[in-house]
Length: 188
Image (tube, rainbow, N blue to C red):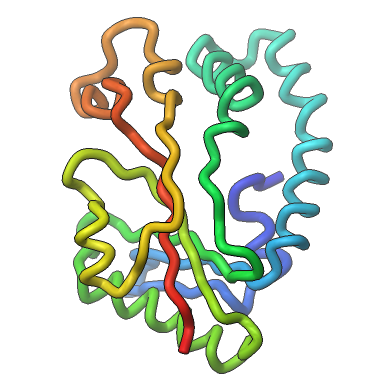
């Protein structure tokens, strides 16, 4: 059961793009052109996962960090979701750090936008969501890249997860100034 990527790979595999480098997968983009179908798929998957997750907590399979994450997810996480443009396609991507640069990212995203224009001409807007904080992934950066901010919600996830001091590499996130941001772009 793959909650985060199952829809993209099982229902819309034609919208899955891969970055290959030195004969290995270096990144991917997973796209969705039907938000209503995606939402129904996720709800069915969540309903199927709930009992096994509860069973795992009762048997002690999951430790305190997992418990805090699920507690945040069920009590707060669903309320910390920014709005999204109606009727648009969306995507998620990730690129290994070694290969992550502007040229690779642009090629991956532009390839998806071209696929949308060619295969789904009725879709007029595409959006994505990401965590933003400080000067990293700022509104001015996305504007230079042709994207606009749509909505932004402050996340409590990192403050909620760390009862003790967080690991050094996550201190900025745990400070609480992290936002989940929706960006969008109209398709021409």
